[in-house]
Length: 178
Image 1 (cartoon, rainbow, N blue to C red):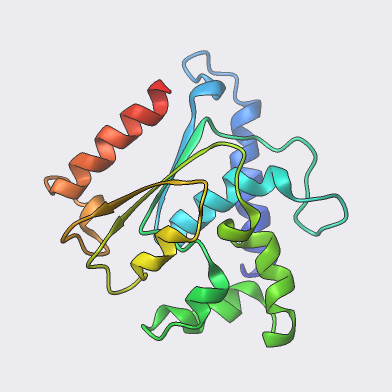
Image 2: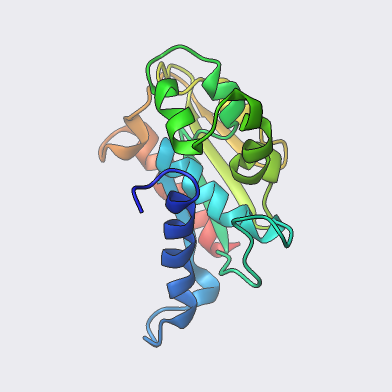
């Protein structure tokens, strides 16, 4: 209720887990990719890594639905590093995490994709001219395939007709064929 900790993450988990219960024969649950932009990219990456949460943690769930792959677009991958930046979005971060500085590391370990990791193919697309989410965020997930888009800003990859959007479509096609 009200979002934040742990509600936002519980909501995402419940929504994603509904895919496993879907009985439409047109949906192949083994060929699902999560794609998200910015904060949505953070949630897509988190959802693809939640199988790594251990029992006893508030967001742990046995056998969560896992995608075939995940693509983060200008995604926030390291919440603690992002919280230390000063471009406007960071003020909302402590509200999302629902804690003060003393418990920030503990919660970030459960919801920060760079710390949690993923058991599926991770691809990050990030513009090197992004002024809202630092391009350094794309370098924090070492196991990810990272594509740095020259001259692209924060929103370029979600706008049809841009070169960055074309890269997204090619990347999604490649992830689904792998």
